Length: 207
Length: 267
Image 1 (tube, rainbow over the protein chains, first blue to last red):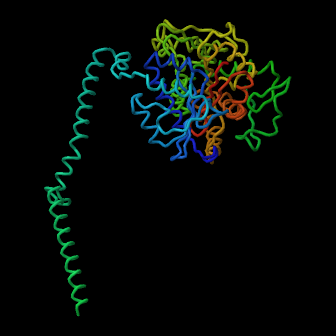
Image 2: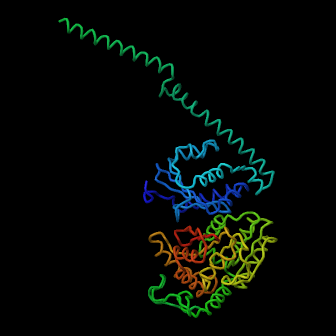
Image 3: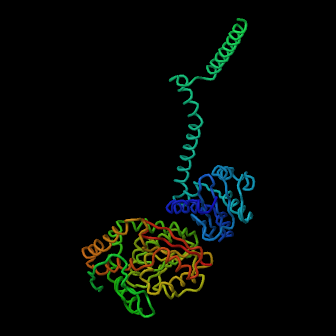
């Protein structure tokens, strides 16, 4: 993939992403100190399937996001969006070297960026506590916990209930036992047809 | 104050104005002696200081608040940091910085114009922003601070009024600690096709009219429109920041490039 074939995110999206990332990093002093230690170092991500590139430059106050590097980045990681996603959502279990990414440049810098992103400990209630005080933080935190549990339950139950509705109420799809019965009948019919075809061939041969 | 100019071509950067030289500089579309610009700009701001916030809201239709909010977010100042806000005017940016740096941080609101600074100070007290903010009447070209004094230095809608812009940028670089950021929020060049025509009509018809009706000062608001056209575009300002010694410089266009936020880091 050539440099010129890669697109950048639109500038407003870059700005919004940088602001969100810096709020996230700013919630954890340790992450900020790791940023400070990496200040001036850059990491380029190339999403080969999307034809997209994104550059992170560490600064003492957080992270700068660019659509393209001014000069060559310290390290460049190339891979599919799913490869990056797997590493990002593995909670640090999947290292950058084992995730199907091509690494060009300083692997040490790439690892330090990965450690930085993996280390951020974001607690929304701490964030709210700092801005609105402990009582609103408690109630908002409790509400969010209940909402999260509700969404988790809905996410788990929705496919089951939808399948049951389509199977039992609308009869648009069939259940497992019906499917097996149907497949058995199809196989029996196929065997019967083959047997009949063999008999016809035999009768034709004896004529 | 500013001569009326009804010549054709008003509203776009005028090619008949010679570039800055050692003896003269632009004051809107006028050429004035270098030593004269500061006084002329000072007179404009003495005149507009009392209606500054109202006019900002009217002229930008309130969007200046979003521009400033974006600038504050991009600066990402942290608790305990030291911030210098140059040409701080009535203190919109400084108030945001003061909230973000908290009681352990410090914000210095600076302006070259006494009337603007007095207005800013009054507004800060009205807003309840006290305790972590100081005020300083200072020329951005010759800052009275030691090297590496601040984590972040900003200038919002002020750089175009500075006589010696390279000197001001060099000073911003000097007083910013290594790794700290210098932020310039300023009008710039529309980057969306077709927007420049609309913007010209608005700038050279609506702004002076608003100035006349609301602030009773048409000339100052015509100067505003002209000074915006004479200000360097995005890429030129970026290269000026690099020349001043700042590194990792970049910018974000806002509202189609009518405004841009430039950011660079002290090496």
